[in-house]
Amino acid sequence: LTVAENAARMEALSRNLTEEGCAMWPGLGVSDFSDWTPEESFLVLGMSREQANRLSERYDQNAFVHGERDGVATLIWTRSGIGTVESHPPRTEAG
Image (cartoon, rainbow, N blue to C red; front, side, top):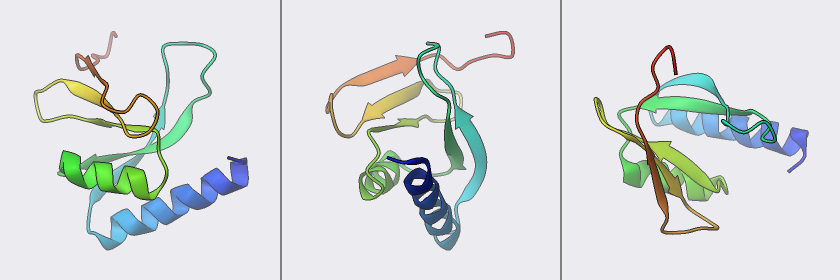
């Protein structure tokens, strides 16, 4: 996607989340690898994995991260690598 296309999708997703009454905050997806450009994202509270999957597919996302309170965050692939799941312990301030 171009920068403009990605920005338009992020704006549409933001409107969609607002219309659904979701509690959300803007974020930045950062990889542990230096070859990955940080991506704008949203932290959305109270959303089920099924809801997140539906929105991920609607906005042509490759994956999303889902987690439960005091649980492990899970990377859910929705396109290439479908069916694979990567779990990571929650990050701390030091990590």
